[in-house]
Amino acid sequence: MKGQDFQAEMFINLEEAYNGTTRVFEHDGQSIKLKIKPGIAEGQILKLPGKGQNIKGGGQPGDLLIFIKIQPHPIFERRGYDLYADLKVDLYTAVLGGKIPFKTLKGSININIQKESSFGKVLRLQKMGMPKYGKTNEFGDLYLKMEVKMPTNLSSKEINLFKELQKLRS
View 1: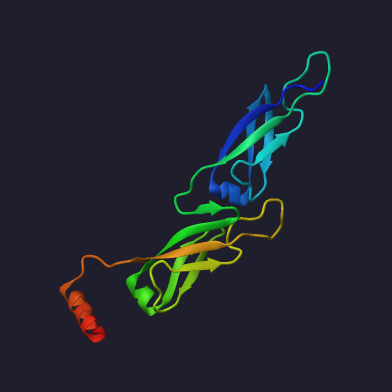
View 2: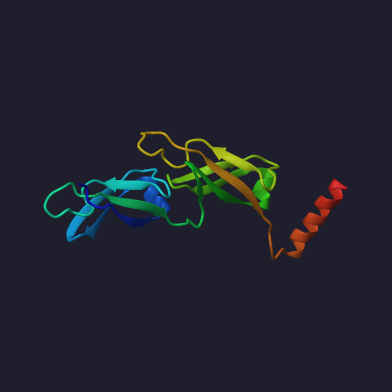
């Protein structure tokens, strides 16, 4: 006869899901160290055999099932192993092209913006998404949607320059 399985939830953040983490928690009077591999997904269940209910008089103990919950991230949205985020680009870089720094979960990178890039353009950065659970050196992709920041508090000289540009385009 087998003891009853116990269930628990564990909340982690996206950085912990990306890098993997180790958690120590108390269960039934014992300290349990749980290693979470990189790339773990929302709702994934980690099974700890024999950590559930013990049967008096013998029998096999139940298991402890830990349901992983990943807290929302302020920048990235996860879909499977792919990540999605907005990339804020100033108007001048969108028009003239250039480089924009961006902090990924892997580290900081410079993104090349082509001249005359439009609002809403999506850039795909291969293998910059989430690591694939249980696999080495396999990653999803990172998709960045360009969001052009319009300048505010323009000086009179800047307004006049925009008017000149407008005349050139007419």
